[in-house]
Length: 304
Ligand code: PGA
Image: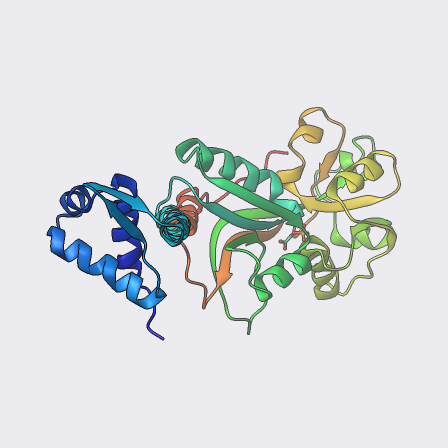
């Protein structure tokens, strides 16, 4: 069976709208016989007349009305498709799917806010979870881009470093070690620590640091948020090791103190990451470049 073509639908839609072969031909820049031929072609395929001529007037038959209805929904779908694809190509609308690790979320939110200032129509999905979960989302190809700490080797990920992330030891301001100008690492071995949950990059870095120095890490409690750790340190449940970028307020209000421990800060870095095989949309590419444009060599000062 021969199939109707999109061209035939478009031509018939014009004839039915104008109820005139001549005006449809004018609109489509075709000759009138060419338009009639196309309509006869449809009638031949369907085996039913679509129009009838009474005097000089053209009327649609019942089959003609059915074909008109189908033509309109097909052309509307195609127009939608074209508009959606234009949005995908363009950068001023469309969707950006991003995942960031808990610790970088404050930095990432600021970057997103200034990006959105430049592209106000863009929709953004932001997932905030720990390192292991963000790696899972990259592996499952659920997101365009991630912002996180260093990625493990051997995964097909492209990671570009753009900012420092210093980890420091925190204590209540009246802790005995807070008064010392220099704290020897060995003191850490006798202090209980509050640690993030397994899967957190901060926790991984902390454990590596203790292992490298041959020190035992005494954990008093495990918590799944930086905020909870800060509160627990203030409540004297132990010391903590967190990114300096999460401590701005507590340090300014002197609710927490950074200990001047030798070997600190543990200098980690933030990366913008995507799958190597990912074809970034122009929007995702623009966001990546924007993030890299925010590159700051050091976001901490040693004067805490
Ligand atoms: P997290 O972040 O401790 O919140 O998982 C750090 C990282 O990305 O490595």
